[in-house]
Image (cartoon, rainbow, N blue to C red):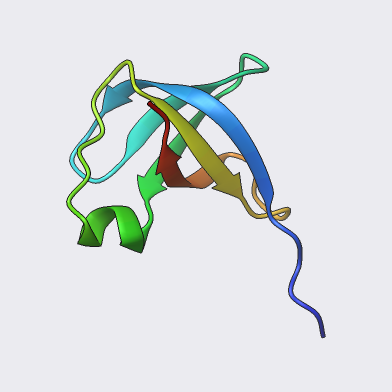
Length: 71
């Protein structure tokens, strides 16, 4: 069985918790997201107000993974 395609959307970080972030997407939805392994390995800090790219599984669109911090 082939791997399902993921959905990527840009958004803005509203609030950060210990290991998760609240992200407001371009379309106005607010979701929770955690940081991907590459961002964690390179110790990239994500603060409220940062623009990020979030990746979603087609099965659960309320939780995502932050894969890139935009400049």
